[in-house]
Amino acid sequence: MTRLRLAKLIYIAERKCVAETGRSLVGGKLVAMKHGPLHSDILDLINGNHRSEPLWSRYFTTRGPREIELTDEPEVGRLSRYEIALLNEVVARHEGLDDFELSELTHGFDEWIRSFRAGTSTVIPVEMLVQIVHPEHAEEIVQEMKDMAVFDEFFSESAT
Image (cartoon, rainbow, N blue to C red):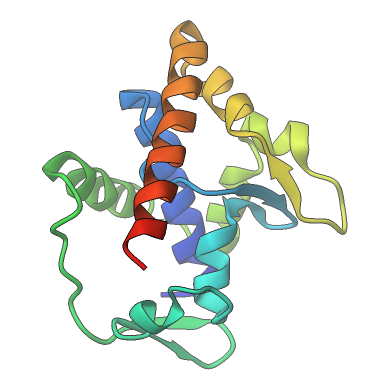
């Protein structure tokens, strides 16, 4: 699969997860770039510039300038059945689109339209994404996401 395709599919799954459950699938910083929105941590992993890259590279290898190859089956113990089904559904739903079409699809997302600035990597505030895909409970969802981020950060620092 191409790097672009992987980044887009994960973003689409994140967006759908927030819309359906009010919870983040991946979390982290979202950015608007030339080819559409994506997670900056996912891009950093793909590019080998993330602190978790050694774990990533146990399962994924970069092949040439654009391709990512799954080299070992990662455990899915931290993913719920819903999350696994969501990822599979997003991949299946978009398998007929080429990478350019997938990128163009994400150019239609309101959060990208509102955030994109040519020549930059502009942060998409999570509050904006939540307001767009889950407006009726946006305030509570954003607060819960912030609380979870603090909780996750605390326990990730405690483990080191």
